[in-house]
Length: 437
Image (cartoon, rainbow, N blue to C red; front, top):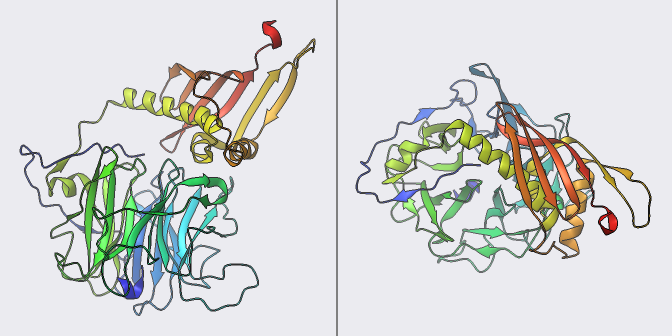
């Protein structure tokens, strides 16, 4: 809609002859609470823990966008409340990072404090959430991501890569306002710094792309296209499955997902069950959902059998521990933010050369992330030959313990399952003795 500018393991097999097509069901999401007939609701997305729903509220004439959030209370959802940092400018397309601690959105708000310039173009912004749940001050993504063109619809995946839509020069397609999907790799994810964006190429872009969503594991991408030749009318939804390092050509989704009206604003729930999207089939924007598995089967794609719960938990714990080590080794702040609890308690013992006893040292969550940021800024990743051994001691329903052998010594970790996500809460470590003594 150009005038309105607007961890899932999905290892998919496309075009399987043994997979019969299936028509997915489409249902209005939280009718008369979130989806209201008299107003516009769009760009809905579910938090990783499934307890919060973020969306854009706007009047029927699309004159002003505000970011709001609804909380799940048992089987019901609360009335959406505008977030404290939104309401003055056009803020839209909210999406949480995979760890749930950062909210991404686009906005025409001033680029710097005190700037009163009236801006028409949208830029990419993010705002972080403190341990107590409060929101901080929104921060604008630095150049070269933001330009004087339109940048909107941001989504960040598990490795920190940023996907978005832009009208910047270099897009594919014809016409005066070419919209394409772009991506930028993280340089310092904690501070919103990225490499020069790259165009996703002709398998994704034909010039009509208006929204994008990528699953955290980068296996699945949804886009909306406005006025595409094979569309049913307005914006339509399309999907691409990643095959190795290559995105397959976009596939159009048939009715009842798409209709002669506008369908846009796709997102997928963290558990991989639901595809959320916005449709104007009732005359104004409303949020709908459909079971993702049925949507995929409708285009001849299927997901493999899921591992049993015990196996899945062990894999998730191992991945969290590897994110912890690799975050320090590679200077990858996104991995550390995903693996560590904000209230992390880390304490270690180390012995300086020539010392007769060990000294103690604490590290907070903020210090851990800052350390990784320095590694990345100085371009001094740990050599590939450094030890990186992970041993899982025990994985229970909600708690787990593990051991890491790294260049700095030995770490013992305690993990918890917080709202379905395994994260490290406590670390005790001991450095190697100088000279092996």
